Image (cartoon, rainbow, N blue to C red; front, top):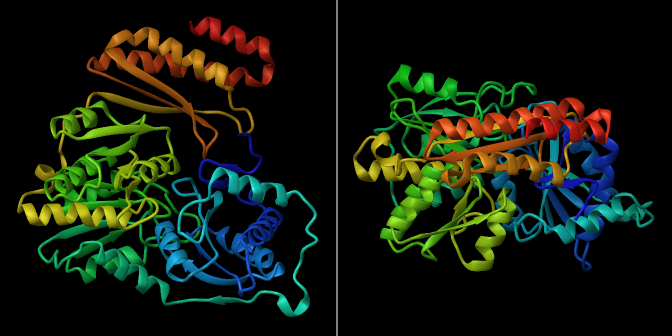
Length: 463
């Protein structure tokens, strides 16, 4: 389904270039009209991360919603999963998160949640798109224009919600935790939750200035966290991303623990405790084969979906799974949340470490991953290759690996990049296959603006 505005995770792009005040206003009007049902006073809640452009987009959304008679509750900087939770808890008709997640500060985006706290379906997003580009004639009459108020109590509500996910009294009093909030949406709630649970918390990436979100910090740049954990001899490190819906863990040795290991740890514990709703988990095609092998040894299954937490959640809901996620750190525990939640996943990991009485490195490194190489090739905005080219590049890698591994080439749904993942038992062979695929893609990126013939030449040379 080709759509003009919505990608795999809401609307996203360069702020004030693609995500403009005009677009935000029209999107607010369109979403407000789609969710305006019945005679009750409708309300939308809006949260955001710490990007400078968030002020501009927030104000424009408020104008859009109020112009069609929807009241707005402004939550301020708060994680994406908090918006999802509060949409349900506050009986809002619609939840909005202003964020571009792990992207640099120049980008921003708009994610929408329905009254049930789940991200919108493709069909619902298409309905909103049709109204965005149509002249709006259904504006509220003067006495029905919406109001906007700022709500300050929501951070405390989310902190209590996150703490309650542990289910019983667990103290982190002996734990020294280095917490990296990526200068993003979790910079207030995450330190508060950990401190209230007894941990000694050392914060980094906790001084947002509007332009430093995700800059050399957070789950996409864990090097600063690794250094700080080793320097302070901390027990564990936690790295959130810009909107705190994903997490990576750093053990006491300074080694990273990715989403695959986190899912394996939680699934293994929950299986022993009888808490898994189905004997397995849901992950994407990007998850390591080592995870699949580990789960098989535990008599658990792994069901794979396309990349994107929406695909994972849809499969979980359709088939009754309560654990799923992505290698990148989106971990969905549907007993608690309707989307990935970095803080709640981190609390589950910390609880496992405390209850085991062992070091994080012993508890969190659950399986031996198969050698896997991930890399990206950036294209100019608006100049991404089509599916035929992607398939041909994939075939080049598959021919190189044969039966000794797999190579996945896909276009990102959030950035103008093509991602290449290769894995197999022979790391040197995998590396060669990935390098060849990336060389072909870089050549294509250079020639994309020269016409179809230049693209054909690049593919022939690569093969």
